[in-house]
Length: 379
Image (tube, rainbow, N blue to C red; front, side):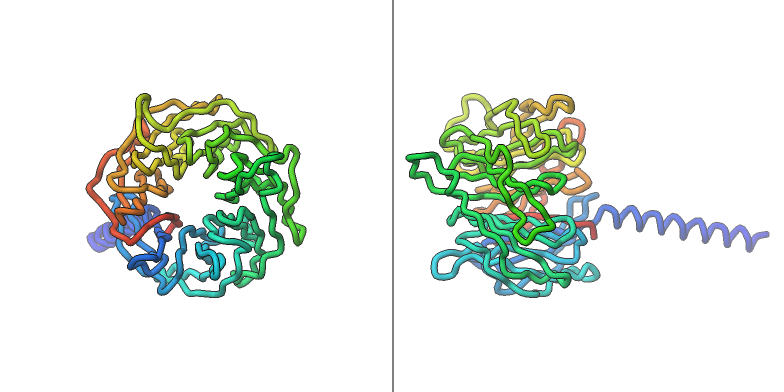
């Protein structure tokens, strides 16, 4: 009887250990950091991020990669893609890597032309068969087919947003994103130079998937500079961040159509100084929206989201504790917000209150050269 009791206790202890290990693994993520490499940066950095504690440990990094200023992970999490933001005699490119989840390392596969200068954003379809790129300085969006082994083919389609320039206008097109709708039937491109959100239909079955939607664009206020857009988790709303005006516009969204319902500043009343809006994101539970502003402000702004109307309500701001918060992300657990301060070369880790949405300092910082893009996947 005594032996049975001991055996039972040992079994119980083993079960507890397994449960603890399971809980721990669910709170661990790989954090990918894209950077500018005009200083000491080596390119893409991979960290082990603990979403229970907010701690991060460097796992690996690439070597001699040029300006991977935006990175994206494939839906099956086997591949990582990065823009190479260059121009002039060395026009932009996109690079593909395989990712070994067992040890957190990246292995270069191949590279292909992005179809323009200064590619600043890319996205992949959930089946990892297509990749789209925004070439900022050229004002073009390109579509790149992906092979089964994750390698990139030459681009199959290139579209120049300049065709949407108003009659008589001399505005220069600057495509800043290529974002898929939640059902991946549409692709939208915020054009900072034309002050428009261009809307395309996306047909995965065609070699050239992009065709104009109807309507083909939504106009922003002149001089506002649309930069980044995000869809709500319930797929009913979309929020567009404007770089030059520092405002965010709320749209009701359905089947490729955007209806404006609100436009708000991302800074408190009475704020002075130059506005320089950057990133926009929504908490995993869909209750709060966050924006970042660089230039003179260097803040993260918090809004609550009305679940019924989609409208935003200003909650407050938090200093980014650094210079030029070009990008930020909320970890999948919703526990932390990580702010990438490009010019002060720091990623500040903030604790996030899930009830109020507000941020608080943790005193934890990841020091990395020129961080400008953050992505996470489960470890």
